Image (cartoon, rainbow, N blue to C red; front, side):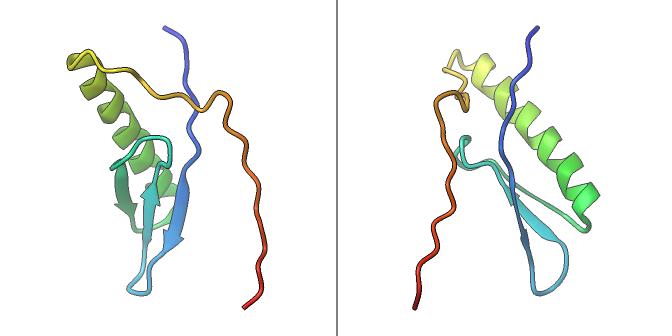
Length: 75
């Protein structure tokens, strides 16, 4: 079995902890009380997401041909 890599985004929440989203996997969202826990939870969420896609014979999105750029705009 090969490996897949996904970019994750961690957003610090006002009440504490971090919400994690996986932009390439719509609806793949999780939460952790620390950065380390959030990353662990994200790995588990991605694995379950991919398992579900395989079970339903759906295409597994990859991040090939995705380029990231941070654009700054002013208010």
